[in-house]
Image (tube, rainbow, N blue to C red; front, side):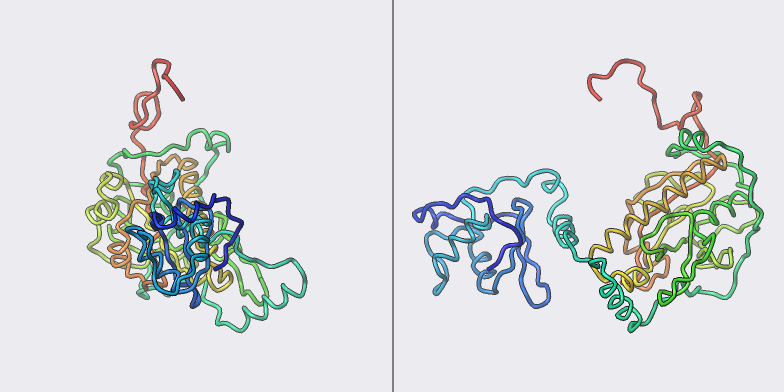
Length: 373
């Protein structure tokens, strides 16, 4: 039994060992043939044998002074020292009392992971290891050879950068007016297409997009729901950033499907178009085979969403973002190759319908001093 860091628990007396019960909640993971235990009530992650797992499972209702034959009293004492056998179960501290064991397990699995030590030798070994693995394509194979090519004319945009920062807001109400094709095209180009390319040697040719991406892996793909765009038939498309066009995915998908997939929050009832992003995760895992890369992948989604939102503001449009998605149903509609690919985010965009003060209709400016900020 080994701990990942020093314990600060106070050991109970031997007389109280029989009153102990397993800490609740307890997370048990099988990793590389070993068991790892942790709890939101405890700072430790502990590698243990199978018999210790059995002891903890059997002690959920209390030891009552008894434990499996052959279990040393010292093992029980150490589990108490480490805080995995306790006398009183209390609620885990914030935020884990709300987020639960799934978030706790993810949080722990990606902490303190190893990376290159910075030496030339380590970097060379890393590149050699990557070269021995098939490199995934940076371009997703389209579901069809058909493609609607979009205009490559950049819309004139003279908004100062600080004005863009100050005007960016979440918009949920949009005008029932067709969005012009040029602004629609620019939204997709700057949010999801490569602006330049880089020769990275054994790492291949990299896309350089406007949004930041760990290692320039750009695992994010854009599936576009067109609702009210001039010159484009309403349908669900895959955006092809290399050819700058729309590949048909589902001609029947519309507002109803987008609203259902995002729990009917109203974002897609009047917008001009929506985008569901999906991760082709192997692009990231090939270069970064560590579980922490999953956290970076989620960061990348945020970078893309921010570029989408800021570009909308610069073009006089409004955008809204949500991560509340019916994941499995979205994966199916987008025809993703599960579990290698999965839905990550949803965005809506259109011509905003602001309130009388120019702000989104959902924003109310305080008129009296609040009790607290």
